[in-house]
Length: 610
Image 1: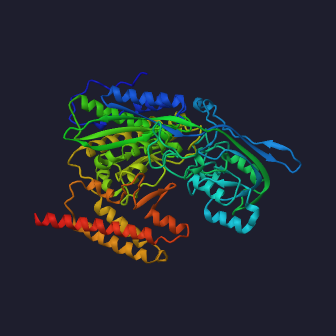
Image 2: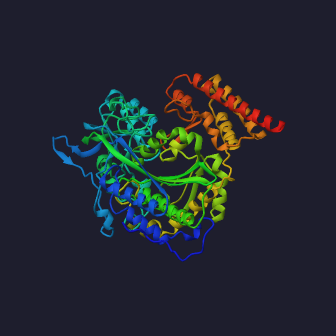
Image 3: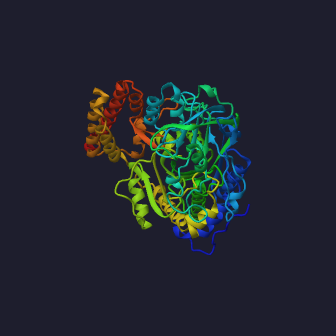
């Protein structure tokens, strides 16, 4: 495969130069990645994996190809029928329409599906469940009583992760679920639809995973390598068992009937039958990584990553992030050829099967967890990096300052407060399993192509980033971050920032959590005081690892992702939400906080004594 050449008639560089980033090369890269759909584990996806490996090798990176075997049931058939009272059955459309102006959108369609949904057939009365929250299903239970059982829930996308919506439907006793994209959210209610504007047309459908977990479903907590022990699917936590399908706004309107979408959840005057057929088997997936070994500090790792797979051509999600990662490799590799060497080792990773539940990144972190706990310094996530021109970012405390420095060098303005990245992307295992500081950024804008066959290079060039100027800005910022983070003198220190966030989270706990809430608050205040006094930690980037249990699959006790958001003190929060006593879990958090405060204080005292 041919690679876009770099300009060679340039002076010797001491450090990677952001001015070498090329918008036209980024466009070429994106179009190369999007030649075929990139469904995880598919032959077409392997073409993109080979392309990434070729770029890494061409620019002097050591190539790592990391294979895993993942439970990714393939949808082999789907059917949705509207059932008339007289016994007639009307087949409703489950496909998207391409655009006459967009050649990508008219070929290579993956069928609309939910990854890791249940298989089988369900038939029943349709109920509108709003956004599919627990509260909305509770309302339906009050309204319908036992008649809710066996119904088909029609659920509007948005508000919470789609997997939680289907799980809530299953727990309420529904036999199946249909999720649709409402025109008010990302369609005609927002502006001109494709091809005239960027918003979702009535036939647009949002695919996506409905797995309520991270990583390979049958190997929770350990890597899904060939021959690994595996749970049976019926035992695996986080899997839903009722069949579900994504449908268009046009189909949803048929189900609502002439009165349109109700204001609140209620029974609808229609019955449907839905069926999902699957080939249930393990699928080979592959992460492709490029390694640039550091000079003075090779055992300190800076990781840049983003997923390579998609539900279709995936120009935004995540062709944009992958293109920026490969451009970063070209710029760093060119500098290395001319004598530059990072102090710390730099890893550039393209993950597989993120769309099915952060599978590739989680399995790699589980496989290398011991090394990451000792060597990982920072992880920078590049996911759906360009969909418009509005710059945004999120960061854990340890990377806020370096992000501000890099952004200032590119004249990019950050908000005063940068929130912790939520769930739903590949930073999660690095933060929660390896205790690493993480950040993500991007240039965003409103559109309706998410997880659709319409997420194509034509839409990117026509509506989202004409001229690829925001891809260029994103790649320049990535280069700045790589240069700063690769220097041994760049201190990744989030101790004070984390301590303040922990104290704020403890203050926000409801007194109804019981006496353990006061213990956590007191311990958090002690940690905050100790952090303000300072410490002599030589490796402050390891601070979070005090809160990561050492056992297999142990996750960060402070913060964990939940759907697209996150939970503070997650073990206690989940117990409380389930109506159980969170006391013991709160006690564990308080003890952990007090121990770390004591360690910080002793370190500070030792430093003062020296």
